[in-house]
Amino acid sequence: MSEPALRLSILGLGTVASGVVRILTGPDSPVSRRAGRTFDIRHVAVRDASKSRDVEIPADRITTDWNAAVSDPEVDVVLELMGGTTTAREAVLAAIAAGKHVVTANKALLAEHGDEVFAVAREAGVCVAYEAAVAGGIPIIATMGCSMTGNRVVSIEAILNGTSNFILTGMLGEQRQYEDVLAEAQDLGYAEADPAMDVDGTDAAQKLILLTQLALGKKVELNEFPRQGIDTLELADMLYAEELGYRVKLLGVTRVVGDQLEMHVEPTLLRLERAIAQTDGALNIVELHGDAVGPLVLSGAGAGQMPTASAVVADLVEVAIGRAQHTFPQLNLWQDDSGLSVMPADQIQRRYFLRFNVEDKPRVIADVADILGRNEISLASIIQHEAPEVEDAENGGTPIVPLVIMTHRTTEGRIRAAESALAELSTVRAPHIRMPVAD
Ligand code: NAP
Ligand code: HSE
Image 1 (cartoon, rainbow, N blue to C red):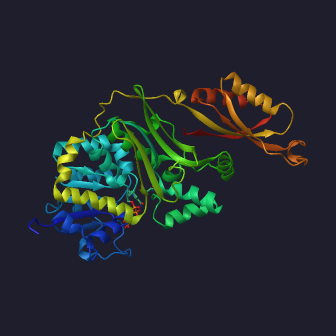
Image 2 (cartoon, rainbow, N blue to C red):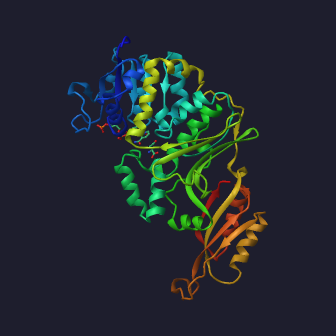
Image 3 (cartoon, rainbow, N blue to C red):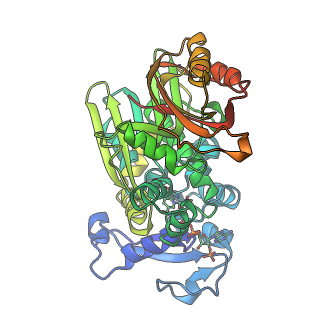
């Protein structure tokens, strides 16, 4: 090979970084042939140098000093695979300042500090590649950044968190407990260091922010759109949804509506026959709609060691070949030039699944329907299963039963107004469940 070896500093040697080392150092690795050059792992920065690792790195290449790994003048590319937003930000900025290209899998960092990171990289004439930051092994950044450049993207609907999807699949398919499936997702290396980010919708929202920025040139902050995770979801509601012909998924949506951008990440009911509804386990799926290409669907492993390492290595090869250095400046990342504003949550229009716990006695359904009707919410269907004829001592003899309502299309504002009025009814017990329905 005529090109000199590409010299790397890898920050982190956890799930993803170990997978990258495995691909680069595997005996039959095709990567060097594809890149036209070999890879020389000069430094690997870790927190704890004494930890045993499942990949072999010579001891003199392991360091606990990420700064030394980043500032070595002989290094060409820094792979930031530590995670987090504090040290990772410092390390990425230091790498860029030292003239290194950066490959990162860190969506939290880019969703929060992307504007700063991309601006300094452009200024320094280096690139920041981040295929692995969104949807694990699915080549969604390459697809949007290169293959769809002839399109205006009008909508994105996606499952973007493997851990949540793995939990939902385990709860529904195997009737397993939430905590038990979450622990398995952690063991399998799908979850973030703090899994709260996976299950409360933050991780999926960060990825949706990155996709929205790339597709539409719109910078959106985490607190600008509705976000809910699966951490409060009950199996009972997933089963009611199935009874109605829907599956519940943690769905991220970005949709252009006039000059507004509708965005949300929430547990959502999807018709069972849709590909998104049938995307199970740690798989992710992204359904795009481009004005020229029409619908486009990409699906694959959204989390886990080797799928994520596959995306990191793809970026590395782009840098090795020199393609990333050409495409990165053209992506115009994090410039807000879309002319779009984020739609206020109250104006978002869709159908809703509502579940109330109500006293099983006369007029209750009539009162609930009356309040919904007064808020111009039309009912599409109601389920109240027959309650057993037993006395409920705790409640003065009146049993509490679930009342499930599917509405016709309405606004979130009307739903919220109705919820406030329903909270005043003594026959309706808090909390109640509200999930949107994707059409
Ligand atoms: P991980 O298994 O927790 O590994 C993190 C690594 O970073 C560890 O090796 C840790 O060192 C090292 N590290 C942390 N802080 C450090 C510091 N201050 N100095 C030096 N080393 C430090 O995490 P991961 O799952 O590989 O995730 C890494 C990144 O990839 C995150 O941004 C994550 O969001 C992203 N990502 C992960 C997946 C996935 O499926 N896991 C998928 C896509 C993207 P020690 O080993 O010594 O503790
Ligand atoms: N924790 C993330 C997930 C990893 O479960 O999707 C992939 O970004």
